[in-house]
Length: 256
Image (cartoon, rainbow, N blue to C red; front, side, top):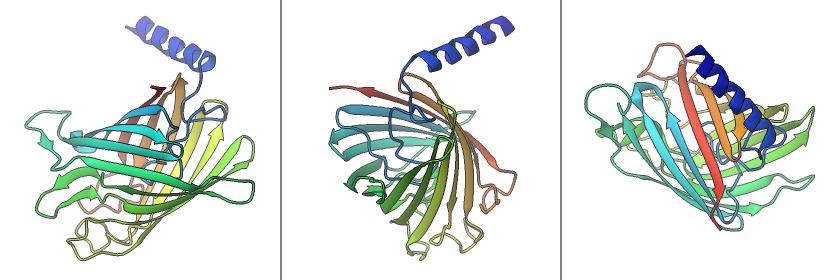
């Protein structure tokens, strides 16, 4: 068994060095659409399809399918549920998620990229009585991103959003900020902070906001894996234990 794990690990390392990259590191071939939870200005290229899975606490699994429809325009759908991994009945989400984004400004040496979009996919369990996810969906958003050459690349991100999950009366515009730093050709370190201005009445969020950190690795041709630590400030009122561990798997491929 140990020899098998060693062979698999060596194969992944060799593949990651020899094949085109995913969405992490200095040699990243594709733009990423999200830092961890926050939407950023990246848009899937025309003619490409992206498939991704989020695996989170409470057995939550969310599957995503995105397509680059036109230049600077992509469309996606998603669906999942809680307790998919584990025992007992699966608690499927009430509705599939929809994600549409259009980049209206391309990045230049002085101007950040700017993308407008809509995303109805939240994170975590879905609560029917509240008509919301544990982490609210972004809803309508405007995202700006700027890259800098600094021992590799440093990317800064800022997003304003308005979620349609506002039955709790917290229908405020929200703000998120984040950063990505490449470490070598295949790895990126990521950090984001969601101010949660629309979710701080104590029922779900405690007013401290959500701080998430992650490690992203391009392991092969269009293939990226990501390990995240979520809610480092222990803001969630429904999970008061230590930070959540989560895994994201992503694959991007040209279809035409």
